[in-house]
Each structure stands twice: as C-alpha cells, then as structure tokens.
Length: 282
Ligand SMILES: Nc1ncnc2c1ncn2[C@@H]1O[C@H](COP(=O)(O)OP(=O)(O)OP(=O)(O)O)[C@@H](O)[C@H]1O
Ligand SMILES: [Mg+2]
Image 1 (tube, rainbow, N blue to C red):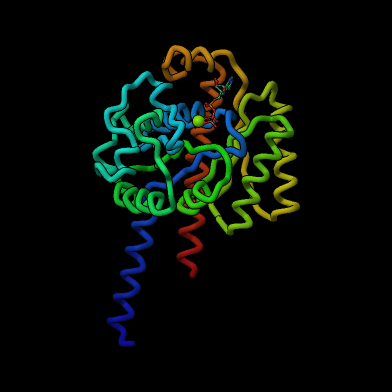
Image 2: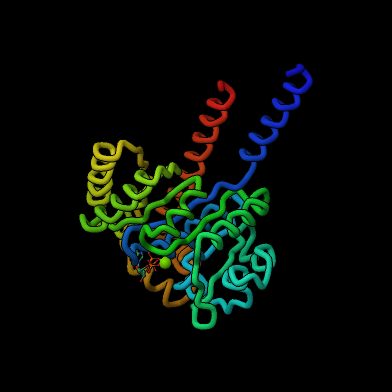
C-alpha cells in the first residue's frame, strides 16, 4: 500500500476514534426484578447530571410500563411508541424538560401496546447514534429483568447502572443480570447503586457480597457508584408528581444522588482517558 493510502486510513481511523469519543455515552439503568427504584433513580440522577452542565437525553425505555411521565405529571403528546410504530422520527418526540435535560417519554400502553422486537431496538439505537453528538449521556430507564431484548439493549450501552436493594434476594437478582451479560459476552462498564439502604453498613455489605460473587464466579468488575437511603420523601415526591430536588432540595437523599452524579462524571472521565491511552498505544 502506498504511503498516501496508509495516511488516509490513519486519518479515517483517527476521525472515527474522535467521533466515538465525542458522542454521548449510553447508560442503561437496569435491575434483576422490578421495583428496585430504577425509574426514581434514573430521573433524579439525570436531573443532577444536568445540573452539572452535562447535556442529558433521558428515555423511558420501559416501553409497555412507562412511568416517567407520571413521576412528572406530564401529558405526553409524542410518546416513544409513535417512533416505534414508525409514525415519527426520534428527534421529533424529544421534549426539553429543563436546561440540559431532554426527555423522551413513554405512554401507559393502553393505546399503543408495543410488541418490541430486535429490529425495533436496532432501529432505535441506529437513530440514537445520529442524536448522540448533541449529548453527554443518553440514559435509558429500562424494564426489569434480563430477557433477550434487554440484553440487546445492553449490547448497545457503554454503561450499566444496576439498581439493587440491599436484601440478599435482590443482590442475587443483580448477580443473575450480570451473569446474563457475562454469558452473552456483553461488556459495558458495570456499576451498582444500592437503593433503600437502611444504613451505610448495610449498603456496603450488600455491595461487597455482590462484588465477591461476580469477581469469583464471573471474573468481571463491578464498581459501586453509591448508596441511596430509604426515605419517605421519595414516596412523597412521587405522590406530588415532582422531582425530589424540588420537594426536598436539601435532603440527605438528594445529596446522595448528587454525589453519585459527581462520581459518575469523574469515573467516566477516567474511563475515557484510559480508553484514549489504550487506543493511542495500539
Ligand atoms: N430510596 C427510596 N426510599 C423509599 N422508597 C423508594 C426509594 N426508591 C424507590 N422507592 C419506592 O419504590 C417504588 C418503586 O420505585 P420505581 O418505580 O422507581 O422502581 P422501578 O425499579 O422503576 O420499578 P419497575 O421495575 O416496576 O419499573 C416506588 O413506590 C418508590 O416510591
Ligand atoms: Mg420503572
């Protein structure tokens, strides 16, 4: 190959690397079983990242049991189902919720019960890729469990945030999710939030048990992003259909989620730098 052609290929690879580095990172918020607090966490986490000037697209990807619009008392004119049913583009259904926070809402599924399939998931991510340059993070509030569609979604994700409760049953469910990922050779960066911890000790012990099991049996890494306390303020904010940062801005639980957002940004920067280092060496 002549040197000009080699140079062109090098340039092309450099450009590809740069555009991947400048694109939004896709973050799947997942759990083994339902009800661990994924939707509550996804919304408040996204809002805390947006406060730190990160440009966020939050998507209610729990296509048949969407909830985020109810958390915010929103009537949704353009839900995700309209895109999935090919009635509109993804761009057209984005709502600006606040500065730096855009949301694609779902609907409650009465009119548009979606039969999700791999083709729809792939089309969604193909279209998300085009929007990714406008964002720092695209956050997907997902359905519980590890069926093949969730695994397909995870295959497009850069990060998993596994939201678990501290109980051994929930830790086991989180372990099973990680096992599905490992068995299917999915390699997003795996992080964990222990939600509804009664104390720091309880949350830390729960994470440590999960960490020992995945290190020992699956040989993969998981990182603790943080602990979120159990608090009545959460139920109150959901009942009043407002963000927790509006109903309880100075609460301990908001500072916990805020610290998690901070840690996540730092962790992302570190992971990016390492990736650049590795690709520069190769
Ligand atoms: N830190 C917390 N303290 C107290 N209650 C909480 C906390 N986090 C979540 N909850 C409560 O747990 C319930 C489930 O929360 P949420 O809907 O966010 O879970 P989910 O994982 O998204 O559920 P699903 O799997 O069904 O989508 C809600 O009633 C919420 O009020
Ligand atoms: Mg949910």
